[in-house]
Image 1 (spheres, one colour):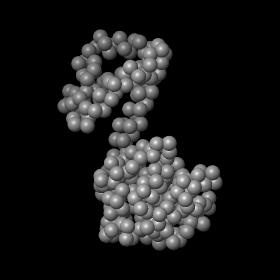
Image 2: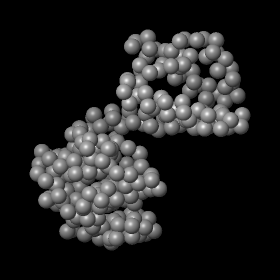
Image 3: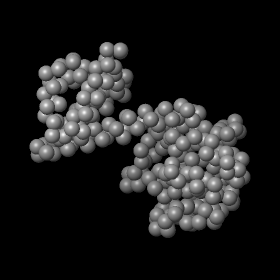
Amino acid sequence: MNAKQQIKKVTIVGAGNVAHNFALAFRNAGYIIHQVYSRTQRSAMLLSQAMNTNFTTNLSELKSDTDLIILAINDDALSDVICNIQLKNVPIVHTSGSTSMNIFEPCGFKNYGIFYPVQSFSKNETESLEPIPICVEANSTKTEDLLLSLARSLSTKVFAMDSEKRKALHIAAVFANNFSNHLFHIASDILGKKQIPFEIIRPLVEKTAEKIKYEKPINTQTGPAVRNDEKVIDNHIEYLKDNPEYAKIYELITADIYKAQQNN
């Protein structure tokens, strides 16, 4: 099944980071952004102007002559938005990594699924979906085939994945992306208190990221926890005594690194 024969016009529900990137990627791939919805007029208008299309702030005004509805909104809003969309015969997907496909069931849709990009997005830094993995799930084989074809028209890395596996993937992504970024923030804060620029450790961060392109992370681990260097570890924890939250994180991760290495 060729997605471009089945899907020409796409409606974007949402106007945040994911919505902006999806709208641009779909347009660049030759699809028509048929309409944009957002709760706030300004955000809906800005995205619709960028896509040269119409917008609405009323879900009852979504146009019925669309071929696909993409929900690119916060997980907390999904349930209310889904059940207030009246176009039950139009294929519909959400882009969440952690919300089950079953959220569509009570609302009467016939063809629905998941279209989850494994990436964090920014409005100010739009990017191609081509290298970004997209995970797909649907309520029927026919709809899944359509979504897989659609995904392959946008990305070179497409996976059929059920909700349980996608939840594990999303949790792993939180650890790898959100938590690691917070650790960068902690490092920056520690450095900043001594007027040391974060730039000094940037090559170290980049080298670590480069290593895991080719190796399992556990095999590239270095530092005092791997060596079980108790004097260094105790010295670091003592240094952090004025920031007990950082000390707690340091101790917890150090213990887990040591345990992981022992089991490797």
